[in-house]
Every structure is written in C-alpha cells, then in structure tokens.
Image 1: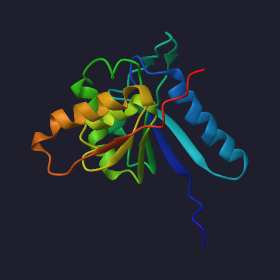
Image 2: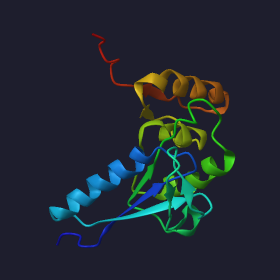
Image 3: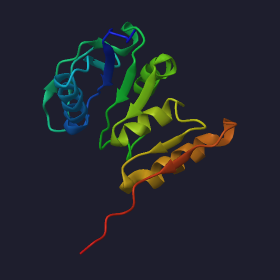
Image 4: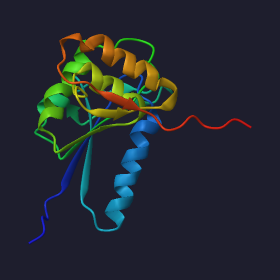
Length: 162
C-alpha cells in the first residue's frame, strides 16, 4: 500500500537569505502538489525568529530548526554573504543534527556553505554556484585536516561569453 502521509519539507532561512532560494523551491513543491504530491513546507530559522532577506523583505518563519521533528527533506537556502564571510556558528550548529536525521538533505546555491560549515558535506560530493565552487572547495580543504574523508566539489560549466 502506498505511503499516504505528507512529505515534510523544511527550508532553513536566515538573515540575508536570497529570496529566490526560498521562493523557487517552495513554488516547485506547490506545483507538484497540484499534480497529486503532498508536500508540506515550513520555513525555519536557527532561533525561530523571523528573518530579513537580502532584498529587505521580511520572512515570517514557522519556528526554530531545533524545535521541529525530523523532516523528510531539509533544504538550506543560500545567501550572497557566505561565499565572502564565515558562516556564523549558530547557523551551522542549527542544521547539523536536523541534517543527520533528515531523509534527504540539499542546499540551494550557496546554502552549501552552511552545510559545509556544519560538517554535513564531509566525505560527500557537493555542488554550488559555479562562481564560488572554488571557494567552497578551499574552505572544505582548509577545515579538512581533522577529517578522514575528502569532499568533492563540482559546479556546472562556466557559461560561454559572447
């Protein structure tokens, strides 16, 4: 008998989050629901407080990442901040345990930097925006001295110019 329970999807958001990294996946799941899927989407922040996107749009969240049970899918939205600066410890810490117990873990674009800071990408293949893939690989290598497994970072081919 098919599983009829809803598929719970958490999108982790944080101050400075790229709005497209939140709205895009949410729209995809909503569209799938029109065709019979049963995705239930929640927005979560590290501490349960509402966040402000990189555009200044305030996003209301459904709660804190730590206050929720395990999700079928955990998505971490990206930001233009984290290729340039270190991911705050509270943000990295907030995704570590939920990522360990989620059925599926993914990031949107530069959300991979949050997963890398949390150690979730250790020993895994990862991808991010092609313009910052080299930085993600460098960060993982710098932190890799205490890691026993390597991580491979790939990016789509650089777009052709003119």
